[in-house]
Image 1: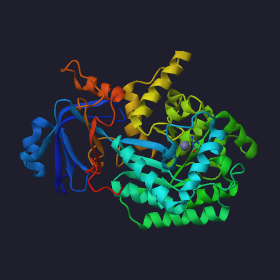
Image 2 (image 1 turned 90 degrees about the vertical axis):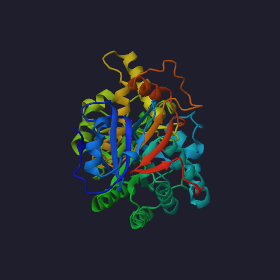
Image 3 (image 1 turned 45 degrees about the horizontal axis):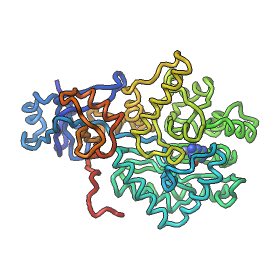
Image 4 (image 1 turned 45 degrees about the vertical axis):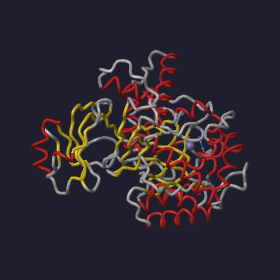
Length: 455
Ligand code: GUN
Ligand code: ZN
């Protein structure tokens, strides 16, 4: 029996073929010969069986000739959710991975982020990162920008222009003794954050929202953290930051905030742990801290490429899931060198297998679980699972049309009768943007880009 909402809006598109997604109960659900309808608002109106098409067409008032049929090696999967990416660092992605975190920030990162006071430089980099991530299947991104309000607003505008769902954060830091040129005063941080939020909200972009962004405890005074906690609370906003990425950083935080019993408590004291908070990394959190994450509804963004590339630590994903902490994946460009969420899936699998080698008690993640983290898990981590993450009726149609046999693509199909699960596993492990032939966000086709593109 088809699953559908009472038809209140008109159907804009109907697709027939294989749909693959995750639910809370099942990490990998494959619906073969399914029929999915998208309404004029970009929401999923129904998902049923191909054989039910006559009844569905009568109920929803579409004609059978309007149905788009997928080819044999094609399927739809939900768009991926990058829960942590520094848009401003895209300019040096793929380089500068030879230092641990704190030295890496001072040597490579702060000098590059400083350049975003130049709006033309910002426009170039932000256009490229939005296009690159969309092409690689990131339909939702949670972005760090820089301390510059106008450039951060520009990132919001570019994401909106290209049709990406995004949270955009103007970075806040009022303490940075190693790079005094790259910080604001407490008052500037407060005023500029308020301006950023007000101006971004005033644009009324349907899919782009501000996120309150203290960079991390070592660059924020207690006073700033307190003010940002209040701003987020008063405006019911998302919050993002970093936590317990590397041991030197944890030690630094415990020295800077001697009154706090843990790194997690530094944020908790200032009301920064909420059910709309996502913290990146968490490699070195204790079980007590994970419990506090669960109790406050705070989520974690697991960024395996970055954690390996900067030799930061190895997050035990099984332990996080055991504590029932919401969890998504992040690329953490440019600490992570790849902007592709497929890379994040693969690195998450590799890393969990390394932990399993070290201790067989650590059961490795399955590819099905890693897929769920990249889609539904990410949407839950950003508290956006009412709108995106899978193909439930009523959610927005955020989807990738994948052709595993795309001409000129990276996958050779030897057995042409491979079933959809095998094709899907090949795509997750071997595929790239050549296989992602179309990308939809809220029902709108955003890849291939419609010409002329803004840049
Ligand atoms: N901690 C504070 N800032 C950053 C950053 O830009 N990247 C990473 N990986 N960790 C951080
Ligand atoms: Zn980061």
